[in-house]
Length: 297
Length: 318
Image 1 (cartoon, each protein chain N blue to C red):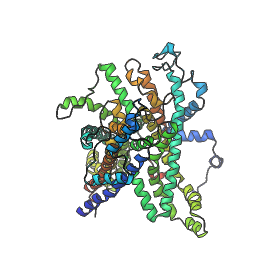
Image 2 (image 1 turned 135 degrees about the vertical axis):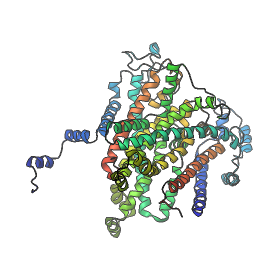
Image 3 (image 1 turned 120 degrees about the horizontal axis):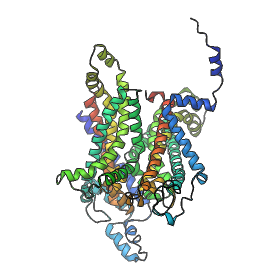
Image 4 (image 1 turned 90 degrees about the horizontal axis):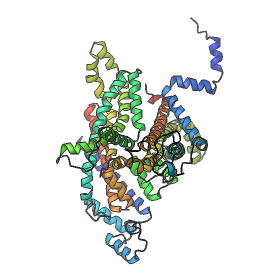
């Protein structure tokens, strides 16, 4: 039988799918990733429109309603200072997203540049770079972050840096292994023969070709970065009061009053889990889509 | 094999020396030292300069950096970590107590993680794309998402509200009272173990899926072998390799990385000591702890490689 393609199918395939069609296809092919994406979209909306969604200012104390259980007035109750937990959870998504995105972007970019440069130059530079990365990798994630915090001090910006630093060697190693293959491509030889500078070859010719592994590392860092920020804030070495951050909300009074006011301990933790869960689901699906070798069958 | 082992052991030395140098430099970049941390943060801003200088002299902090460094390195060469700058006690003494606790939690958490991961991973792979597979995957992704300190808070809360009982807050060594010891440590081990089982479960599942597609599995099925026997005799051992790596690496991280969970369960372990020593600017203690964790990681990596050869006879080391 000759292969006679159905004309209607042909037409459908020829027309570029719209956003709705794309979203529909994704939800059919990768339901878990689609669920993650939906949660992420909600989180971004919550962060962007926190001022409209949150019923109260997250920093204002309601002295008439301290440790109030969840009521219609305070949907998720209030904390020991009479601050509305719901509003703080909503505003906390800003901190989580800022730290998560900032740290993963920094970590992935620096990691990718180091990985590519290491593969491109090879030889002694590669050897020393890799030994340095090995050294950094011999620290647990949180320990290295704590060392950076000790040097820089606490606060949102320093937390972003502290989380980015341990991500760099992890990203550099993965990117380097892909870049090693890219380096052997004829177009790199061609670029070198044309007399382009090292900078130009690394930035213009090699980096774009290791975008897939970099992107995969970036998304897998996002969840971890949010979790790490929560952990650091929880032990008091991350974001500082009175900024609304989920890890911070679990600290101190939330544990002391856990028996009488469990809402203080439950909802911020739920928010952390949901956010990290969503980013992990999405990252997994993205990895499956971009890297067929790692596909979870 | 012996040559390989000796070579690997010798190669650890430059890595660890590098870590030692790195921490030495990093710590000295930080503004402030242990003397300032002790006197200026106690609300006493008017300490006399002479007293602080005297204190610095006692600790050897007045000497030039290169001299401090050579003293430190000379101590390391003799495996002497010196005295804690904050408490003045020998560092080995201070660490020993906490090491026992952290090691026990790490071992228990690893056992829990392995006991969860391997059966669940096999189950998910065998029942691929059924609801069992999906349930296992969601269970493991949820484990990755939940902060173990929050899980710890919830566990304590549950015990408090349901059983009106809280785990003991004081550490009893295992050899003094096993029941008391386990009653305290099983909870952090569970909270952390569940989280760490997630990565191994996923690894077990995917490597199992790969092995199940091998020709020898098809041959075994074709000759009519029982599925359970195929799994037990042919598949699991071959799928274990990447899982061993993950479990090994996690174990090394558990040793020093339980900073947050230890706070929830009020455990006086290495993680807490680490946070304290950083905030006290206790150089000697921080250096020793970082080196300990790094040494554990390097050593576990080495043991994992040795275990490879044992699980997979095709791997030979020269």
